[in-house]
Length: 330
Figure 1: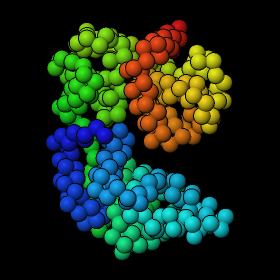
Figure 2 (figure 1 turned 180 degrees about the vertical axis):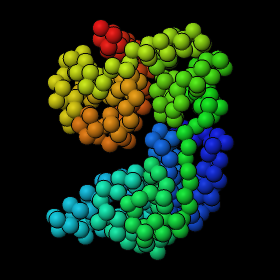
Figure 3 (figure 1 turned 90 degrees about the vertical axis):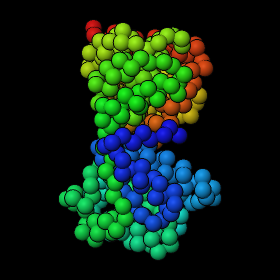
């Protein structure tokens, strides 16, 4: 688990983490809210890891807002409500991502309210993420807003330039690579993004350079120049080119097949989607068969780890990436 770097813009987060270490239920529900890419999912994963580290047998239930609403709604129609209720109401810790998705399911907000009340009674921990402050977002029931306000609401901002420089240096160091201060500053200015996007950018630089090569301004400027050509690249283009390159059917690439060759091609496509487009994890997952963003995160991180060890695959991915870039300029 990569540590979350809390710059001046996110000092309250560090206080919240320390409070959770002392008593996880004291500030429950803990609501992290901020724009896409600010690191909310990364933080929730880290906080969940802290809970499990302290109590390995903890019953943790993780779900997105839309999945919670659909699962509960389907259970009522299929007469399996008791099983669904047992799953959620019996949780020692509930991790609810993308609370804002429940704005599309107003009838389920009351169910969520009852769930939060029961989990508080049981002393369970509730961790929530939302794109905006739910207390000031139209569409949430007043009772739900009141319930959320009884916990701790923490804004999560995109990292400022100084924090981005620290993140970039840290990512390079974890890969045992050296990046000059000026190069890190240039990247921090050019890419005002969050941790995941910055990781993808640094990984691109690592993939395009030799292991012993220092990532300097010349390397960064080449990357920025190539990025001028990426505006035309779409998820559809990446999916089509990847399927053709690895000789798999496009339907299989987006489907549920677990054949190793297809899983590998799918992971490569997701990695390239993160490197060559500005699409979110959620958008990438939706394009590749309706997968959730955590599946995309896992596929990308697993492929990055594999590329470090598999020279032949690394060369193949580099060749595919170059062909996609060339196609975008033709």
